[in-house]
Amino acid sequence: MPNVRAVPTLRRRRLGDALRQYRTAAGVSQEAAGEAMGWAESKMSRIENAKARMPPGDIARLLVRYGVTDSTVVAALENLARDAGKQGWWQTYGDVVAQIYKDYLTLESDAESTHIYTPNLIPGLLQTGAYAREIIAATAITRTPEEVNALAEVRRTRQAILTTRSGGSPLKLWALIHEAALHQRFAAQPFLMREQLRHLLDMADLPNITIQVMPLIATPHPGMLGLFEIVRFPAPWPTVVNLENLRGGQFVEGTDDVKVFEAAFERVVAAALSVDDSREIIKHIMERNGT
Image 1 (cartoon, rainbow, N blue to C red):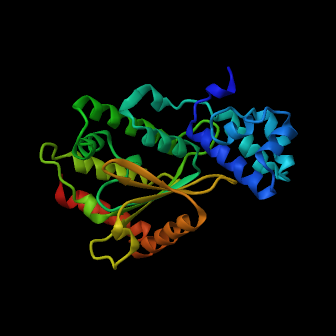
Image 2 (image 1 turned 30 degrees about the vertical axis):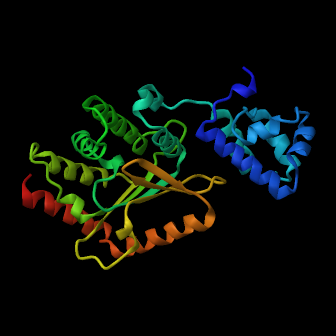
Image 3 (image 1 turned 90 degrees about the vertical axis):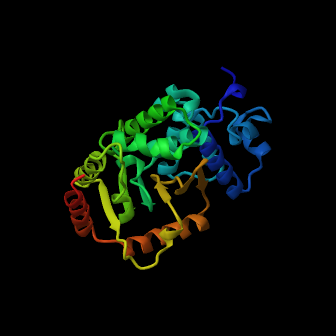
């Protein structure tokens, strides 16, 4: 299949961005890079703009032209080139899953860890099916009941990444949840929240999951401005921050911007209860209300 027909997937865009950065750092023009590889003049531009496929077998040879010989970097780019055109399981849901959400699921599937602060709800990776349906129905206000059910199914399916992942270790999750989210009530389903809190306690037993609670009487902290998620990857891929709102999400990239959120997360952690105290308050709320 000709390279010009390549679909600009998120992985292909990340690969193109990385190759452009290495080429620019080496002071090599697109034309010179293409000539060194024996390619047509426009091929390098198409690859960097995610409009053409980059053969994995050509990665090492191109990086040598850029002075990059680190085996970790070479292997990482070769793997990304190999996986660039792969479609995730979520593609079967079609347009029900928005493109920005598909991009996020791609990032999550490639990630090593994710750190998230949620002020008003349980993080999606830790939601029960019933809780997910209620939250999606309340927040995805333009969705039909059938779409709500489909999105809840997607949310539950993606949680498998916390316990098993082909070719790698389960995702490491550090979740900071505001205490207010633990007091949520669902009038039509009085036992829903009890099951959700029990699920949090069960998930907290996994070695790759850390859960902390931000108490109602916490000191001021950066998390008061809203939900944010820091998604980290194996070297050499840069960290990405995900921000969510009613219309979907927004990615924050770039070293300086990401550092701000990483520093913010550290301050949120400092203001939250310890892991042991967090477990106790979750258990206390679950038992005290009996709901």
